[in-house]
Image 1 (cartoon, one colour):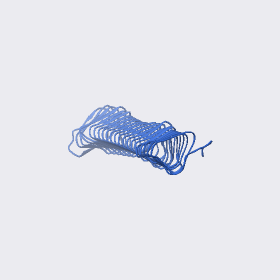
Image 2 (cartoon, one colour):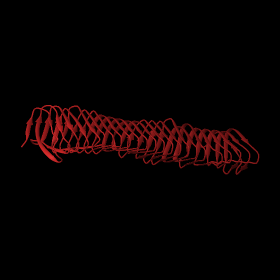
Image 3 (cartoon, rainbow, N blue to C red):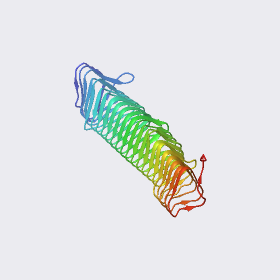
Image 4 (cartoon, rainbow, N blue to C red):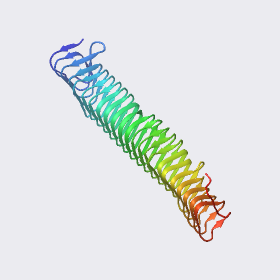
Length: 412
């Protein structure tokens, strides 16, 4: 049995009472602890106006209306289609089907078992969607979980975000943590940690804690306060990381500035400057316009168009090449060095040195030295030979294994 109504229905029935409705012309007022069922297949209640729910209400069907206002908890066991806005005060809403509306405002939490399509949604607690999410603005105070793809202009979440599928988001602003499967996000601003399991395309990443990206990720600016890791290859323009950078594949970008350590499993190609406060370990070749490392630089080969300056050690298998090369005081170089100007600071050690202008400061040590103009200060040690084409200056108390030779040409 059901009622076909063309006027506002107001019901204040006892707890757990049930009503079967078809369509309502005007508004529908549902009393507390009322269960409403619909007609048809699938069972649906259609309201031309606004639905007012006074609290603890259940619709054992789908519901369509112009607007929906509720106090307390509300359950829709079918689809919920609202032309304009939904407002739920002091409660949570659970929709077992699809939810479509213009604006949604829920004080506590919202759970949608299928797809969610809105323009603007504001949830004070948590938002969970098992299907797709499409909208302009998603604002959640606590946590936001989407099991399906998410296509959203702006996401603003105070706590955590998890998207278990592809994300297409213009702006992602999260106070705590964010994790997605893959996708495109133009700007990312996260206070804690951000993770993309697979490839991510982005313009800007600004994260206070840690970032982990998947293989073949590609973007522009990366600013991370803690650590940054890529499980595979990465293309970028600028990286500024306070702690550690780890790229298990190869990295290619314009600028890399790291306070701590850099580890790269493949090659590292930087068109402009590479600046690292601690240590750089690159399994393949590292190349840059300019390289400046406070501690250690280790790579298959190190090459720079302009300069390489390292405070601690340079360790290579195939050598180091740049216009200007300098190793710090008490530093060491393993592998051949080739540059227009090479400076080995006090008490530092090097192997073979090739250059136009070579300076070994007091107490430095080298194997073989081949240069146009060579200066060897006092107390240095040369374990091999010295060959020069133009000028040689040697200080006091220098240990030479062989007499220096002036030659017409230098070995390659």
